Image (tube, rainbow, N blue to C red; front, side):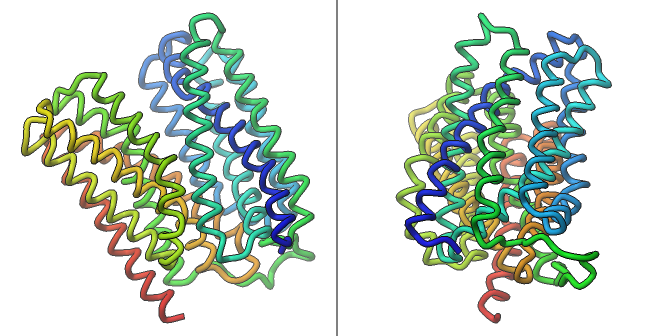
Length: 400
């Protein structure tokens, strides 16, 4: 474990690198789908295939990424995973057909499944357990700021710069965080040290509590922030007949609230156990969905009261994001055996990736089959399931 002064010195470059990487993601965030569907003339189904292939690749190979990090160390896994990401987005700048697009998606998914267990094990190895929630909560805020900055730059540059330039910039944005892991994986007491031999003596990460934690991860991924990017705009636009300006304002209020609430909620989240904080976050999401149901299903959302309730929805949802992002990874690692951080986060990454695939599918199905009340209700039920399972884990934490 690094001394406190060294922790601060080591993590300042990480936050800069994280911001740069997130800004790169933001640069291509609004462009990728349009480029595939319109510029390459592959249509909307190709966009769905792209994101589906990415999620499946990341989901299937998550445990392998964790095991490779445990076997060969975070440096090797970070370099290989990061190079996969760089290669994927460099290739994206020059693709012309569907097969190439799907290759990019698969390579990017593989890269993430290798890179993030290495990153997380390095972070966890450099901080004491009591600072885990604050560290991951702050990381989530930095990511949001970076993506917002990148998306803003993209909206300015897209009229004068070819999409290939943005894809190449995204590829380059992975370099700083790869270098950070390379620099610090050996300097901290690794949360998952490289193993000698065949690793046959490793303790298994699997336990009944860890299985429940994976289910919680899946539900948090499926009914959390991904819904704000997929189902929520559809409900507001197609079912509640809100204007695009209202949808944009909801998104902006949410993004600003994430940044403002991170510092406000930081000390309060520390009072909860990891699973208790995740349960609180899921409960806040459920409350937010019920607020949105009130605004669009039970009142006139175009009235001043309906608008105010929608803004409350955005802020409460942001509070859920901050709380859950702070505690989810510490909860997963806390339920794994000592020295198994990379394998635990790699396995949970699979559950997360599958959740990002299932969540929009559930949400869009609800939009197609139900009105606003039924759609918001389906999302609230998903959040309630995450809440209940998290409370089960809280009981387990209490009993350990």
